[in-house]
Image (cartoon, rainbow, N blue to C red; front, side):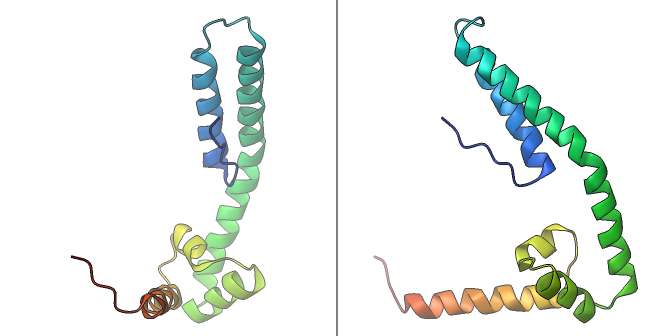
Length: 120
């Protein structure tokens, strides 16, 4: 059974489509499994539709914040106050230098932990 990703509206919509697809693969469309998957897909689609206005509002708020604050202030708000990861900040479309620095720092730390390993 696949894992259904419910981490964002897009992921919920994709999971609804996956559930519909899996339901269509059921040999007997009158079976309990097919009915359950169709019901699950419908419920996921309803949730995605219900969350869309909230997502639009959140996008507008974050866009406004991006216009009102310089990169350091915006990074502090998103990272410290809202506890967003650098990857989440980048996924919003903000190309903040603090995110790049942190990701580069994490990458170099991972390389240091691994040490020098050579493959043949």
